[in-house]
Length: 554
Image 1 (cartoon, rainbow, N blue to C red):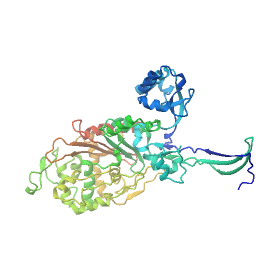
Image 2: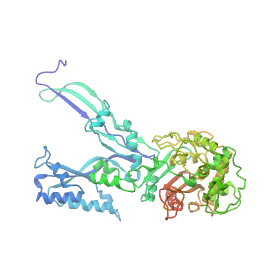
Image 3: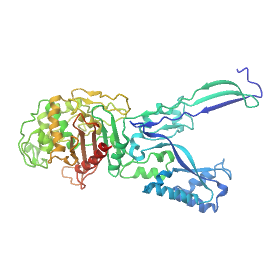
């Protein structure tokens, strides 16, 4: 087959590993890429008082003694071998030289010093995939892991080997094909001196592509820091271009731990944690509460069911349509006059919007929600759960319709979908399509044309601007003198029954720059799963106000 191949020649097969592409933010900052960690290893022949030393190492690394012993008794291990036991974060000198080093950094340094005091322990640098934002973007960026036999079976002929890694979640999984690259390979004939006689076959290595996202790292971190203790999520986008600036789910986990090797104890604790740090909340649907009222206002105007100047009358703080509702009443928190649409949005009046929903009627209500993206997949790179208005295929009762008017009932909305609906208020009624992969020339692509009319959104804007700028508005704590903001707060009650007083309260704040000439336009929606007893939606407003301070000051 190969005429030049002689009896004392050898065939050499060499592979060159493709570099996995980096994941970058909008400014080119690395979100995932090459980094350095510290490999903790043992040279068995240098261990003194073996059992005591191994117990000490296991305690410092928070792993089992059995795990260490299994690695030390592997067939390849000799007395002078370096046996890698665990990969831990590298402590950088620059981090230790800070005026106030982080407590975590000092703990890691202390651990490494104690490990080095044990004879036979060595530390060495090792190249690993690193996630710069760690917990702040773990649900978005995801992580890679070594391929399994099942992966090799599921991806035949795609260039994976037993040494490969594969994206397991997030952007790492979403763009696996582009990020992974293709390994190179050379098959050569070597003579008896090891010199190359002939190259029989050669495949050039192709490094993986870099993937640049629309994400703003500083905003992503800022949102995570504000909400890291709260079960909830935040989404932020440029309301004119559709660029998604942040996708945050809290509480979170450190995706770097999946790269360094996650102990079974750590995996169990993550899965059993009642705050569900592995659960990706920004992909789910939630009861929107009063953040839904501007949407209902838009439906009322679009269907011609509501005159924005009509005074619905002051009903006090509780109302029902008639005695057919039995003991059920719609309640609200504030009395005001006149009871018109603008004021109803500012004062977040449940009674006004319950009446509005009844005027609209269930058919108009459902049809218009379907027109603005309900019960359908969002056109976005990451699959989001569909927004719905009923647990069945329709709104079943008059009370359910009334409750839906103020974002309760069985209304469930994905936060990014809600943000997309809100973009229509700034784009003459057109809903902008969100996207995650960076484009050099960012320009808004319409997802749903004429979701509302230009005249409709002008009416709605009067109300949502008042929410943040009127001292009586529920979002006034986010008011700024330098930049005109608009928005809507929301508190959704989750009850097992109508009489239930122990249910959760979901807190929301949707806020956006209302002036098109602003340098850094943003539309931000944050949700916290339980705000009962900590200030309701006001808790979310204050945290988002802090985030916006940092965003505009950069």
